[in-house]
Amino acid sequence: METVDVTLDPESERQLKAVWWIFFILGVVTAALGVLVIFRPLAGAYGLAVLIAATLIVSGIADMLGAAQWRHSWVPIAWGVLSIAAGIAALVWPDITLWALAVVIGIVLIARGTMRTAASIVSRPPIWGFWLIVGLIELAAGIVALVWPEITILALAIVIGIDLLIAGIAGISFALRTRRMIT
Image (tube, rainbow, N blue to C red; front, side, top):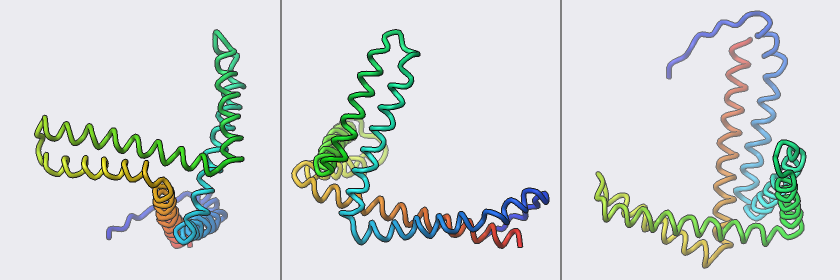
């Protein structure tokens, strides 16, 4: 692996010395959350429902606050109220939120798989057989997502857990490299 020699001005080096440990702690917490979600995917799935709820509520508030910039200000206010109501519903009924997410994922996978399969047969692009197989797998995964939404949500939670674990390890690595660079 190639190393890069970086020279920092004294102020930048002082700032990095003061904060490198924050990146380390964030990396450890993120990696720990990833491991937790991998081994307790149901908890991760409910965390996803809460994140969806929070996103809906915050975007609804933002829509309502930005209503003055619209010609018909009642439209973004209606969007905002709808988003906030959906966010509250997602908090109150996380199972419904997760089921709806699985249905959307299933529909998208079926649509993509169908289009990819048809396009690979009709267009015969380079490695069309590969694209045909990918399309059929997407189609099958979409059907499974609709028929068995619980497994879809668990799989999604595990993927999120793996992503968190990798991000945490990257954060720890960054912090340790930064610390070595400034000492």
